[in-house]
Image 1 (cartoon, helix red, strand yellow):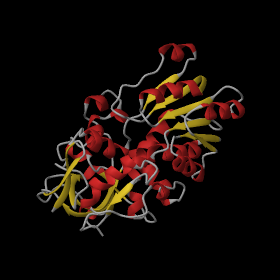
Image 2 (spheres, one colour; image 1 turned 90 degrees about the vertical axis):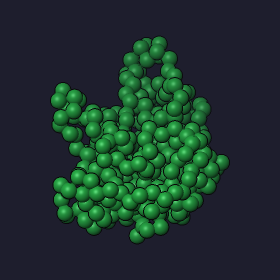
Image 3 (cartoon, rainbow, N blue to C red; image 1 turned 90 degrees about the horizontal axis):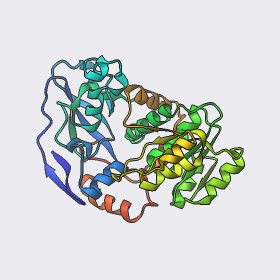
Length: 347
């Protein structure tokens, strides 16, 4: 079968790989859709991956084969790849920190014992059965492929502890940032404003429910002065990870506000410690997601309370078009946010 493998910076090979082995506890999933998201684009640009299975980690598909010790009811089920429940036996679980379970993080990254040697930019993939979540009725395969980035956003919103009526700023209106803005409203925020240099993304943020959207600069600060009683935002999300974004978020929140570090760019983040101390700003980081985040997202998608279809490109591409799609996303950042790949055997 075919799989797209990242060989280095801006270098992808479409190669023949072996069919997934039917190992104990593992399922084989035929991939219907796999999204090209921001982390895939970063990996393509730098050539750096945390694991081979990470390249193509936001996917939907159908279980077609089972290893031993996997319930037979999984055969034929539509599923997404996500996070398992806490294992209960790692050092974090034993210490009472199941929300930081080692195995959950290993599976998200793709370094667990049953991880595949490639990601879901492929016809089929083998994964630990604990990783797959059934797709509820009412969610199509295209939207289901974005359940993984939506779960990342849901985890960040949950960790922010947004309060009823809070004023929220989201810096970076990529796929994650736009979903964060949507979910902030679901979580109780009364006003949400987005910041992004790309006009098309700012327009999309407003279409999805943000009250306003600004290019980086003084516009958002003035808006906060008018709408935030001169205090600033209650919560600001940095969904970019660029060195200046965290500092901008710190400057936009009120005294005692919360800054969420969500974006990852591979660069060292910079914030002025004096600002943090003087204004008692709380900075929290958010990494990955939990099985509870995934379930919440699937419920919201099934109930039509979360919209992700505007966040993906209108056309599907094939495995041999991934390299060109990556280049287009770099050259034209105002284009599609998440491009969906349909392997040749996908339904």
